[in-house]
Length: 205
Image 1 (cartoon, rainbow, N blue to C red):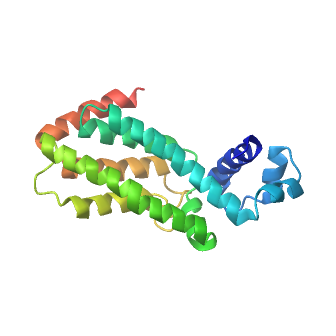
Image 2 (cartoon, one colour):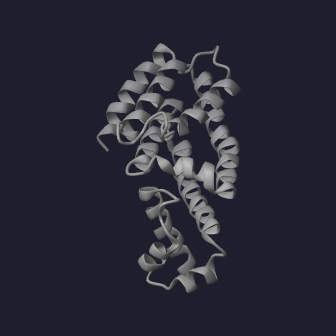
């Protein structure tokens, strides 16, 4: 991918995350990119393709950061707490209509997101659960498949505008509450102590 196209995707992603995929126009993205609309359409077939490439960019960036956490963390609890703060960074300033926009108006991008969620995200969660059970920080009776799917859906629940409208709810707070209850729910007493310690540690970073 050439440098100009990559730059446009990054600019588009920042605009989409703030204002939603549907509200942000191609004209405005072209203007912010310092190019004409004609030039933009020489690089992208249509807005649908630009949205798809922006979603790919976001997920690739998030996957790279998640992989680094999964490899460097000392245990399953440190992994999951660091992922919580990665998610906090990602959702801060993100418009909650983004998820609904994808679902309703951009089927290719939504399909890509759904496939990523059901493969990469599911595998990360399942791996973390398996490791945590082996380390004695998660309960032995946790069903890995069921809880991985539950956690996977919790990840997008904060973006359901009809449940948590942004005018009324702070998305970061909603995400934290959902995630924290999941963490404590699957953990043993040993795990609870680690969660509390790591939450204090990473809250100040």
